[in-house]
Image 1: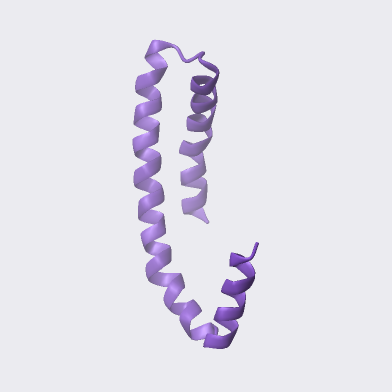
Image 2: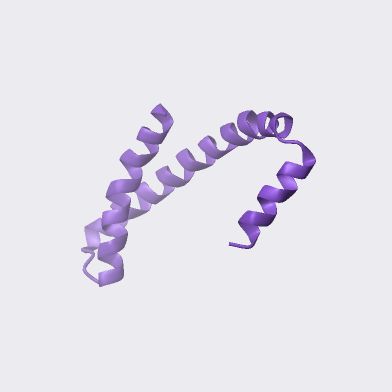
Amino acid sequence: IDEHATIRAVAQPLAVLLRKALAGSVQPAEWQTMKVLALEFSERLGSHAQKEDGALLPVLENLLDEETDRGLFGAYASG
C-alpha cells in the first residue's frame, strides 16, 4: 500500500500536466517537468507490476481451480 501512495504522488501532478497538454495550455518549462514525471511514473509502475506479478499471480493460481478460473475469465471477457 505504501507503493500505491508513492505511485500516486507522481501520478497526480502528471495527470494535471497531461490535462493541461490536452487543453493546449502547457507552458514550455512544464514540458520538461511532464517528461520527468512520466519517466518516474513509468519506472515506479513497472517495478510495482513486476512485484505483483511475482507475488500475487502464483497465489491466485493456487487459490482458484481451473473451472472457477475459466468462469471468471468468461464473465470478465463478456463484459
